[in-house]
Length: 156
Image 1 (cartoon, helix red, strand yellow):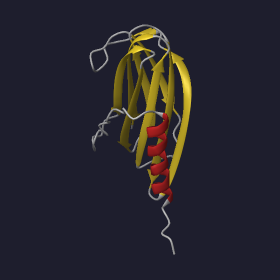
Image 2 (cartoon, rainbow, N blue to C red):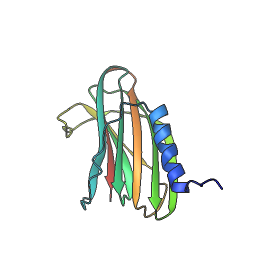
Image 3 (spheres, rainbow, N blue to C red):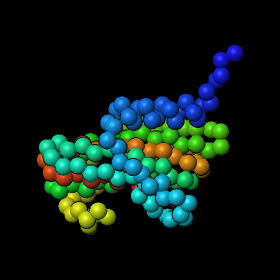
């Protein structure tokens, strides 16, 4: 009898494949924030510059209540964001993915990496209540030229 893969294993494999294929392979490594009991934690970030620059961030968070995407650009412009994540609670798993277009239009405070410019914030829906762990990946591409930074923030 062939061995059956668990739903969580299948969901995690699917999320990794989808994020690698659809979002590109130059993903930034997330910190995961360890076991820290921080209320807000940057779990992944990436940056790029140039004409129609794109950057992909990935990360893992333990016991998140929600995720936010923070974008910084050197000039105000539209940014396309494509995201996906998988969360697990015990032996249950849930996943969601989607996309949105936003415009960076507020003058930004300095980003943690020292960049200044314009920024936007978007909150992602949560796939599973009281999740033990979530893996999230997001790709951002700006409409014009300049620098771009994307951060994935987990809230607890």
